[in-house]
Length: 201
Image (cartoon, rainbow, N blue to C red; front, side, top):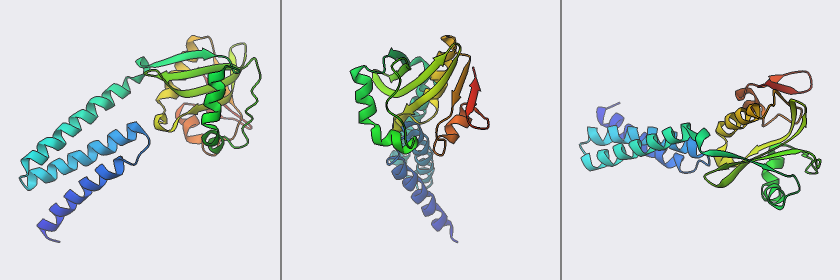
């Protein structure tokens, strides 16, 4: 394996990671993979003394790091909106993402009780998450906890449960399907019981 071959492989790896990043639906993951790819390609450009390419990729790394830093402080950018389950926009949201919701929550019952608590999480004015639950005193049973695809980096969940705690909720439970939801529940600190999950706030 020659030195020239190794250098070429570094360039191909950087290019591949940059290309792969653009097919990712999660903005957070896109920024991370793009940063790594741009950094590797910057190193490659420096090795072959292509300084304009190196400078461009260095700038891309800085831009990505700036956005990642901004996204890490996303709690200040999210807003929690109280809604009613029968509001037209809530129904529109449920219809708009019906198929995606069903893929994560098979056999989801979309006929939520009229007294259900409904929270819409908004980011920069755009609704990106919907949570519906039944509250009993300081406990809440989650009936639906959904985020649109580009925001599945756990940041909405962290923000949501922090806000629920401020509203007096002390325990959250979930008894629905967990095949595609388990990683999220574990990341959010839920503990699996016999027939449900629960989280102390």
